[in-house]
Length: 170
Ligand code: APR
View 1 (cartoon, rainbow, N blue to C red):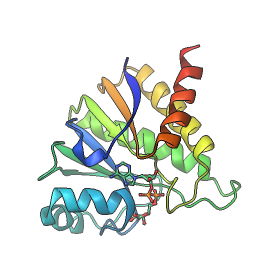
View 2 (view 1 turned 135 degrees about the vertical axis):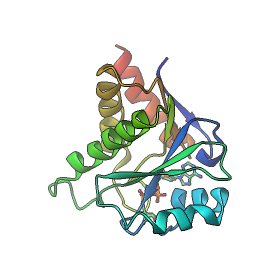
View 3 (view 1 turned 180 degrees about the vertical axis):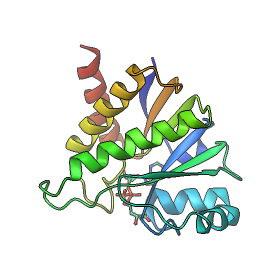
View 4 (view 1 turned 90 degrees about the vertical axis):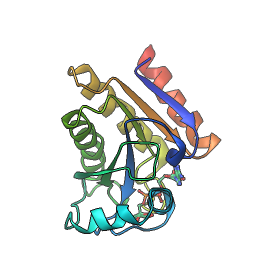
């Protein structure tokens, strides 16, 4: 199954690339951003400082350093502002851009956190729907990426992603 959902700490996953839910500075933060920087070590921040930030909806790549993953793809999700500020398109862009970058370095397995659904306040059901449909559409477009894992941090989030994936399978 090319697209699955699990509950885990994304920093523990032995995949080719993990995606970081970063902010536009790319200089670290809390949540999954903080966890990834802690696990990767200080070289990750040094590498990020060379990237000159990242705009919302875009993604930039670094090595994984001390992480099991070879690469970290840093993407910046939209802050939820009620849904009429183009949030859906920006969130979809995070998933599409991340997969495009992964394919560009021949990363075959990619793991995503639930982008924007923590500090940035994006409602989980809407965000999961966008994540699943965007990833599925991108993989169907003959992407070099072979497997995508939605790495949920809570059982509640996992149930939402699983329901979206079940819808897809119908
Ligand atoms: N592994 C997997 N998922 C995690 C982990 C982890 N180790 N830690 C947190 N998460 C989950 C959260 O529970 C949430 O479901 O990642 C999801 C995204 O939440 P945030 O990390 O808060 O990211 P986001 O909502 O996109 O906000 C980004 O938060 O940490 C700052 O620097 C970051 O400013 C940026 C903002």
